[in-house]
Amino acid sequence: MDQFSGGRSDALVRITESHRELWQHAFERPELAAVTRTDENAAASITSEERLFVGLLISHVQTVFEAQRLGVLPSFWGRDWDVAAFFARPIPRAIWGELRELQNPAFRHYVDGLIEQPAALRRRGA
Image 1: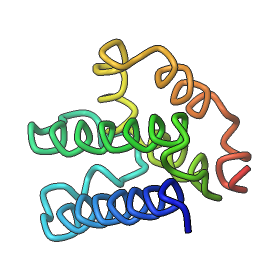
Image 2: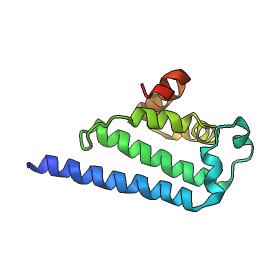
Image 3: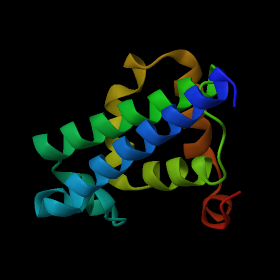
Image 4: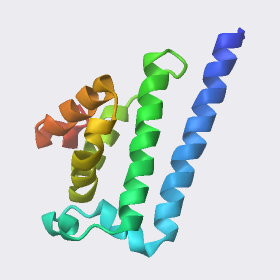
C-alpha cells in the first residue's frame, strides 16, 4: 500500500469517528431531538444548543466536502443523500440560512444544490 492510500484510509477512519461522535452526542442529549424533526414547527424556536450542534455538523460536512475535493478522502455512496436529507429538516435548513454566507462558495453551491433537489430524489437517494 502506498503512503497516499494509507493516508486516505486514516482520513476515512477519522471522519467516520467524528461523524459517530457528533450523532452519539445528539442521541444522548434529548434536548437536541428537535434537530431531526421534520415538521415545519420545529424551527419556530431554535435553542442555542441546537444552533451549536447544527453548526458543528455543518463544519463536519464541509470538512468531508473539502477532503473529497482535495482527494484526501474517497467519495462514498450515499453522501449526497445523507446531506440532502439533513438539510431538508427545518432546523438544519434554518440554521444553514443563517450560516451559509460564512461558508466558502464551492461548499455553499454544493449544499444549496442539494437543498433545491426535488424531495422525490432525496427520498430515492439519487
